[in-house]
Image 1: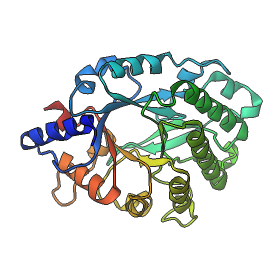
Image 2 (image 1 turned 180 degrees about the vertical axis):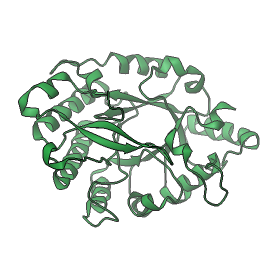
Image 3 (image 1 turned 90 degrees about the vertical axis):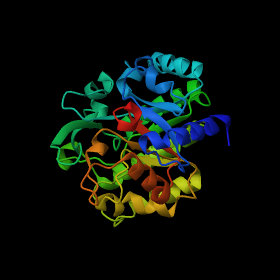
Length: 319
């Protein structure tokens, strides 16, 4: 056990009586701060029971013009966390959940070879919340995918071994107009898996995690997408995770959760999030929102989670 992990477990044990922490957890705790600067969240990042910070970096921010890269924000966040002896997990974002958010480089939307670069997608933001509209990059277009993979290669060149990990965004998308978008479920699945393989090859030292919750067109592995994802991750050695830990949620149990349970000893890393929408779900046994202990028990006992990315609104972080 590392000194950092021992310190975390000791601190957690001391606090468990105060806020009900599941003291036997083997997980590492990171905080999720979206696309904000780490310096704005020092009160969370500097806690002795927090091992690191997960930050979202949109594609456009990192490649403002074609072939021109700006990694200054990652450098700033990494410098701040290194001074605190904390870790940085980079979430590279090519999909966005607001109708005004088209955060890919302009050339993708302007040059004909990229076919607009983006397509509308829809997202359910939590229990009882209305479906929202956003955008997703056309990764099934080979030209778009090549540019995204080039960005990953540039990131690996500068940050491999310096950041703790890179995670690719969730597999679930809901594209409404498949004909206009040129969307094909098989092509999308193959494109996402190709990019995960590429990232694993590019990053020799830092962790690589593909978020996987649902695959379009698939339910209960009826296309073999989910089983192939987990088998490939196990064989090649990249981690898997997801944007939501929702204990025994039926939809997830029919899709990724069963595979997380099956592969819990076969994956190099499992990293999953408890984000703000996640905390809107209700425990059917108690009728109350899921507690910290609920999340931790399910993450540990069923999913085999190594890292939890906690939204800073989590009640236990604010007590």
